[in-house]
Image (cartoon, rainbow, N blue to C red):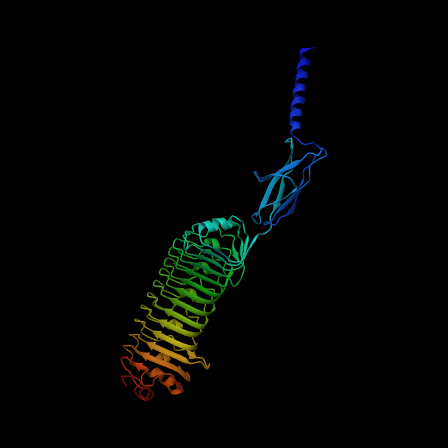
Length: 465
């Protein structure tokens, strides 16, 4: 036999032998293994596959892969239900059939995308371990409140919340060691009544991850020592109840609230670095305002469009506030309190204020020289008791700004104003009041001059007369 033909024969024999050995480890070519997705519920996702050819009555088992991981082997049926999977996540894998002789066939790759996964009820996570365990389950929504409270254990990282997109309830972030809220970039609070509370997070420097929130029931940011601003809330337009920014010593601006236009109550209290209220320009009406204990606050310019405050407006203990610039649009309040603002020298920017429901209190303002600014106020004619307090303003000399005040029933206290000598501005009020809820002989005291009612209604309303 020629040498060339001999070589050719050897190659053919080797190829035949190789194919035979490979085919020995495979199920017959006629065998098909196809996979069907029967459920994409992340709590009980399920797949099914066709049985292989068992014409020779050989037992067949199945190995199941999820991704590259073998998660089950020697399955003797043709269905498999996965343990809890993440929601809104794509999975893929394969099924390998094998018989007792280890002959195998592999399915085509299966793929499925799980449905939305929702946690039912309220959940409180008290440690980083709690957070990691919860987030590993891949919930996309929480039908209830989410409370992250690290009081008894350090909570430092929220990044694994990246599967979460909706909270159908409140969100509390309390007593953590978080530096930021990364992980919440995709989260919205779906209820317009939802409360968002961020309290006692000593290392928190920003809340930028909360950028998808557009409406809330209330927002409370309290005692976060390193938080400098509210960047992240630029899409927030509505707070149905309370905005409370309190005891955050590093917050220096509120400009991220520039799109906030609907608000019920405002508390800005004890923010040592806050110099202005810029960011609140869209607010035109509120029910109540408290601006208190902000030692660096210099201006109210951020409230320049506020025209109405239904219940009370309190300006108290803002040491660097020299005037009320920014309140020139304010026309009506339920009550106004101006208390213990050590540098306040003028309230003339209140000259547009024409209506007060029940209370005016000007007290403990050591540099206030005049009441000019409240001269256009008229107490409304509702049947509620009215109150007027002018107390411990050591530089005020006259009450002329009160000369148009009148009400039928109420309480008056004019006291401890060390330079006050002119009470002629009370004549109209004391003439028309019918029901005095005060001691007629002891409602004016400890002033530079303390006239009686008869003195005021007569010719002795001013000590110089």
